[in-house]
Length: 224
Ligand code: PMT
Image (cartoon, rainbow, N blue to C red; front, top):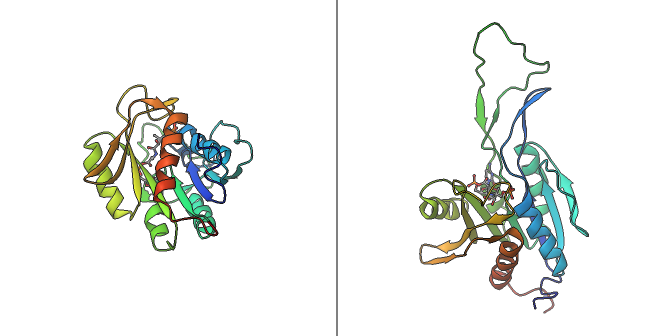
């Protein structure tokens, strides 16, 4: 039905986990598979958008017709997003960006020393969405919120703190949705009294509905 309704729109999507090195063989990451972000990128491309996908390490194939920019660390993802943000109309951050990274990356493999514990000094990573807000001109900015408790309250806090137009909240403690799954159950939140609760759907279906809602939030395309 929606056919080519994203024609002329430029969408920037982030997907997957970030990977923070500890030493040459070890890293800190999370369970994100990239499926949610890749589903959005693929659906938007099919609806006519020009899509750039900034992706942490995943085992997924690049969706046809989508430019994929790989990255690993949160700081790299930040750099790639800021490089491309100015030329996009919409940013959707599905990436599970690690919140902490080792302060020092060891050049050599850390050796085990008897029964001595290993202490890692972790520093907060840059908050990409917060930084992006400072560069916002005409863009519509959408975040995701991975929550395990107080889902709506926590997501509302992120909506405000990160200056978002919309936040997609999912309960990552619920079985059969969220990380890795082909399914998700989300709430689309624009404010305390503007919450749309969706049923459990495939990530492809969630992507379709999300693109409908973002399309309705965007200012009219130039030349239309
Ligand atoms: O990849 P899948 O296996 O398909 O799983 C999908 C998903 C569960 C990863 C996805 O649906 C999801 O919830 N993504 C958001 C994960 C996350 O990092 O949530 P958060 O609540 O910690 O962060 C809130 C928002 O800020 C997110 O849009 C995140 O991309 C962004 N962020 C977070 C940290 C950071 N340093 N910079 C950011 O911009």
